[in-house]
Amino acid sequence: MNDSSPATTSSVPQPPELTSEDTRKRVFAIVGASSGNLVEWFDFYVYSFCAIYFASAFFPKGNQTVQLLNTAGVFAAGFLMRPIGGWMFGRIGDRYGRRTSMMISVIMMCGGSLLIACMPTYASIGTAAPALLLIARLFQGLSVGGEYGTSATYMSEVALAGRRGFFASFQYVTLIGGQLLAVLVIVILQQFLSDAELRAWGWRIPFFMGALAAVVAFYLRRSLAETSTAESRSRKDAGTLAGLLPHKAAFLRVIGFTAAGSLSFYTFTTYMQKYLVNTVGMDAKTSSLIMTAALFVFMVLQPVIGAVSDRIGRRTSLIVYGVATVLCTVPVLSALRDTTSPYSAFGLVILALIAVSFYTSISGLIKAEMFPPEVRALGVGLSYALANAIFGGTAEYAALGLKSLGHESWFYWYVTAMSVISLLVAVTMPEPAKKGYLVDPR
Image 1 (tube, rainbow, N blue to C red):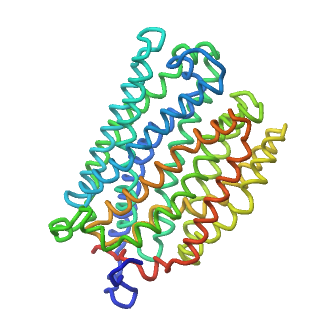
Image 2: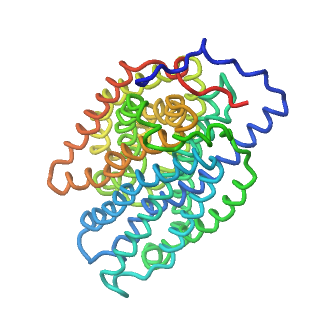
Image 3: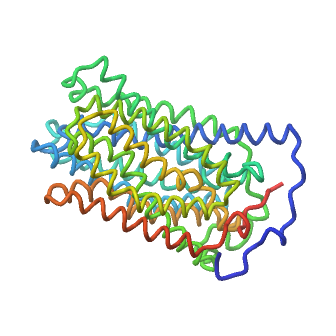
């Protein structure tokens, strides 16, 4: 697991049996943390799903691919703040508590969404418009960079022992739920507003909604119980890079499988809506409907496959993910490019998302199991954020850039190559559920 000797199942004390009241409190904590997580990711993903409508508002007029490429560049830039957010909020979470870190991150997300909602366009203030858009996204990137690591740590620590795969999977239920809610809001707006109205002012509505919901999430998170102990928070190396250094092997493994997991996740979720419009040739409404249905199925899959990981192990789940994405990425994207039926497109997207679910359902938990409590939020958040920023955040930009050069199929092979790396990491790593650091905090 790392350069020091990890805890094993036989060397750690087994937790006492939980009462029904303990179980109820833990389930409530999962729900509370999940609701805030949903709001955070709704705010973050609204940008991607609204980009089709506001791209022309912030960038000089040009063809659709160039405008989308510019908005994708800003989307990718937001990811560059994630490592800073992962470090900053990881340190806060390990030294001052998971709850405090999650409360700060959701308020920061609120500010970013409100700024975008009120922002003047390129026609009004010229180049200052895309500059302000970039600043807002950097702010949101900082927030969500801290949100993932701390919420993954919190939900993994509060989850019921023996069923952690099932309960911790709700982090991605709400993460995907945030995406689903974002695209659902767009679908509803499309039914009541014309395309011209959406491009003129309708795209601002989801950002206002996200800012308001973030305030509600802040108050929900205030009621959560803290999962870290005073002992772990008071350690000299708590939340520090020096404390994380002895666990560099685990850190590198997380980067290895997260790089591919993030890339494939963003390819088949946020970028897929644009792919269906810009490459397949479907209209925006049809694309939104397909992705709404696909994201709902993807969301439902998380606890199912999370529960499977409790049976087969996290390592085996990662191996299944690696094999499946290596085998299906090129065929699925190639078939989508040539399809004319929305039903066929839906089926192909679902096939890819089933494969990705073997990573997403355990994504937060497997990372949390690989780090001790005093550096857990930092280890989970920083390793994820680095891989996510480099590979996940650039997925749309890489895909659109290769398309603009006339080599779109190269992107398919790029995703496949990264999946091969993830598979090699999974095959060579120990089983975190058996040789990890996550034990019941009671």
